[in-house]
Amino acid sequence: MLEKDNSPSLTQKLYRADQVRNNEKRAAEVMGIDMYALMQRAGDAVFKQAMLLLPNSDHYLVLVGIGHNAGDGYIAAVSAANAGKNVKLCAIEPDREVTGDVARARQAWLDIGGKVEHFSEKLLLKADIVIDALLGTGINGTVRNEFADVIDMLNASITPVISVDVPSGLCADTGESLGRCVQADVTVTFIGIKMGLTTGAGKQSCGTLVFEDLGVGKTFASIARSDATALDIKHFRGLAPRPVNSHKGNHGRLLCIGGNKGMSGAIRLTSEAALRSGAGMVKVFAHQDSIVQICGGRPELMVISTGLQEALEWATCVVIGPGLGTDQWAKEIFDTVMDYCQHHPKPIVFDADALNLKAVNTSFVALSDCIITPHSGEAARLLNVAIEDVESNRFNYARQCAQRYDATCVLKGAGSIVDNQKHSWVCRHGNPGMATAGMGDVLAGILGALVAQGLNTDMACQFGVSLHAKAGDLVAQQYGQRGLLASDLFETVRVLINE
Picture 1 (cartoon, rainbow, N blue to C red):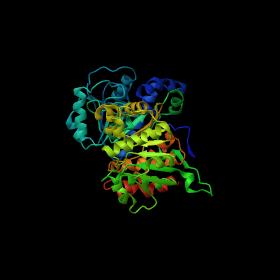
Picture 2: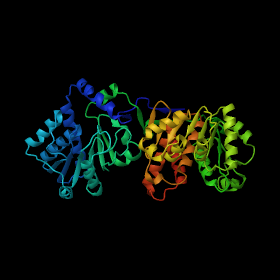
Picture 3: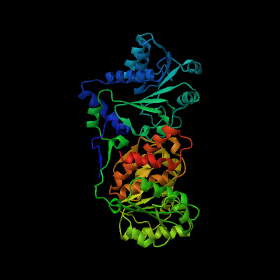
């Protein structure tokens, strides 16, 4: 029903730092390129991005450490100086000996009359642009004080920063700040895109992410294993055209359960999103006191407060949780649904309060074709860990949620992650304007509608998360991020799902 490009492009594959380090040399050798030539290409690529960011800037400040990406920094400095720029290069430890290709790049800088200076705030104030080549992917543990002080000054400055490969102080695998982390305007990453740049704090820290394969990307991708894939709406070919003789029963019967007393809005958003995503019929089971509010203005919804057993028998897919609450009424409804679905398996999406009830349900039994959609707080409750733990390694905890509950997990947030216990996908789309009430409820409705229309849970999550986030981007692009409402996405979702 939904087609997807099964041969991910270079910019879709995501890697751990060690996967890049362990395979880049072999890829270069296959292409007949030595590692110093790769370093030269990387440094030149960084300078080109600096020119694109600020073409008229004259005063460059290049900051280097002693690792491999310091060599990239030296080459970028050479490229900038050869282009007539006024370049100052500072090393945190100017007298520290460097070896191998880094020493060769340093010598190339010295050979054109360059100097390696101590960093000072005065030099930062004079710079039009900063190239951050302090710390690369090999950092282990917390950033040392001498680097932390410089990173603090960079982050307090208004001078634009381009980071080499990863922002200094960022864990390339998890996106966690290792005590201090550069907040870059642009990050130019090489050979393979590092997983930590795509989600959570890493997505924030890297600014605009630019990928340069340095001419060896295809060979590298054929050698190295990828642990995750980036999701982009353009890589989906969309839902198949409907037959001419279609009727509403052909396109899924979705039951949305929630809407406790005083909490009708969430389930209304979920159910209307499901209609706009193409579900043939949508029925809402809600508290008696919420029926009028849910029905109002959307007569296409069937809304009931009794006959849950019959509604479950009717449904081809269930969404439970938006506005459900955690009181006695909610617990009884939740237990009824769990009992039914354990004996009569059907796809089910757990969202919002259903996740909270799952977290305290000691008699939990896994269900088949199950989707869970936690944000970091809900994931923390599901796994009995701290929110900070989840945010420090979103890939790890998305996988733990999927495994613990035998589900496909959608860990929401900046760079939402889909994990099916075997592989991870990360959404490229989305913006801070979507951090408003009801956005998750809309996503739950989209996912439920796609499953009801026949998509398997993995594909529904991949496409649904991309669809939801891209709709948010398009609406924000037209009207701005502030003031973006969850219901603003409906018309755009409808347009996108019909493309």
